[in-house]
Length: 335
Ligand code: KG4
Ligand code: ZN
Image (cartoon, rainbow, N blue to C red):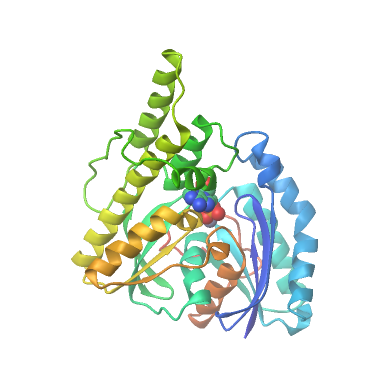
């Protein structure tokens, strides 16, 4: 079964064709990051306009790269929630027109479920397992009971991990989105150079705002003294704290629910420090760890098509009234 996936929830216009939820036939991503970078963050109005400009060509390329026509596609899967509502609407409207003119089923996909499904494209992991989702907008610990059955047991009580990375990067004058620059700088820094706080949050929840503020304060204090922080050291100190927070909560949850399989996903899963910290923790506990290649961590449509396959098998299709939703729990279906 070949599914065309479409993703426009934030600042990537993406389309992909995936066979049976597993084999990537094509995967096209048009990033708007450079444009939003000039403003220091995503400008929703610009994002929607750029999706509208790019969606046709991106989809046409996904079909031609996969060497299929629209009539040879079996279904169209689209991210309908959560995200920037104007951005989502472009993808949802486009997917609806394609599905109904070509008389194909339309499959609504939750963006977080899509990130979780990225691991199906690169490994043989199958539920049940524990997923740690770390992205620009979300930080969740999820019990993946089945391909379309989730329980969120931990979430951030303030900022998402990616937000904290981007804010720390901004303080250090790195371009937006800055997570990858922190990752690079941290490689040559001393993680013990700055004493940064570790939040105390109940259960499996996370908090990153105190840590983010501590990075801002370290930089301001230095500049008030006429000094400059060492970017590499501050990046390394910040990143190692994030690694500690994520690893400790994941270990706690995996033990509590007796999981032997753990998966990491989302844009921040590209981080080399987080990847190796989780690898170490899982190795010590005998957990199997699954992480997608960096190319499938950030927003893409292959993961949406992959999840779309399982949504379709579970009977989750939408009609012409499908709408975009800005905020929606992972456990909620479309309407
Ligand atoms: O999943 P994603 O592409 O978009 C959302 O769904 O939010 O995640 C984007 C986030 C940004 O905050 C970006 O800075 C972060 O992922 N990111 C990284 C790295 N690469 C991307 N954060 C830390 N280290 C990286 N190497
Ligand atoms: Zn995402």
